[in-house]
Length: 183
Length: 131
Image 1 (cartoon, each protein chain N blue to C red):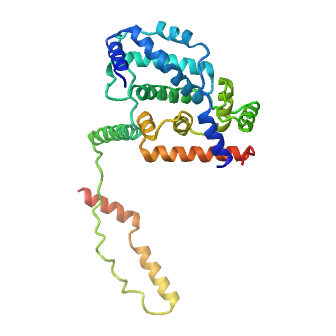
Image 2 (cartoon, rainbow over the protein chains, first blue to last red):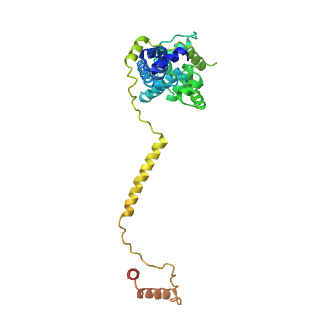
Image 3 (cartoon, rainbow over the protein chains, first blue to last red):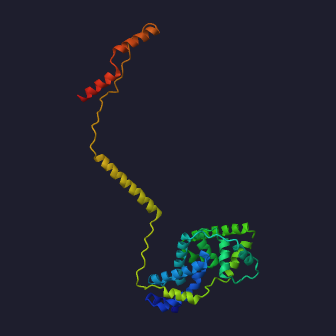
């Protein structure tokens, strides 16, 4: 963490709302990305971002400056996502979702710009059969590109659990894609 | 690299989702921030499944023990105990052993008729044990 970021967080801990604006602006994209992939609904994801930052603001005084701030924010967001998933209906792929995946898979461009709607469709298609925990580990490791150590810290799982959840998730997705004719 | 890995790698490399109007969302978040001093809503701690089971078992055990205590406190009923010596072996009949099968049977039935009935014997034994 840079000295500036550290100073800003210290100011937030003292109740400085303007300093917190910087925190929101810097991290909202990360949290929105996670929430969208987890919840597969843009409005729900925005609500989740809002709820996450309210929680962050309320508990920032307990944040330990020695740990990574973004990991701490991810932890709060992940828990809220899991809570929402437990309350929400099961995420099921719609008939049009597969078309988005087909377009994506057939596109030669490796750094394709995807719209939020396309992200939702693709994730809904490939990760529909995953459990909440598998979905979280898969999203953090595979889609967000976080390291195993960070995922362990965020989810509270140990290395073996992260590895096994990721393995099962990948196998389920592989099977799903095979069923759709992608092998 | 197979197709699944290819798709997953492409997803990792693809442009990540973005908020349509980040400033609007930021303002919304900033407006909805509560006072930092406001106490957090106390979330009741969710007890562990083992603790829950233990709690149920202990509650049931407590109810059972209370029931047992009440039962044991109740006035005991006077039970009539019958003094009866089971160890005394019934004497082997040394009668009606000679003659034909018919004679033996007739002799046995005759003696049986002369003896007091089982009911009378039980009644007599109860009387003896009580007095």
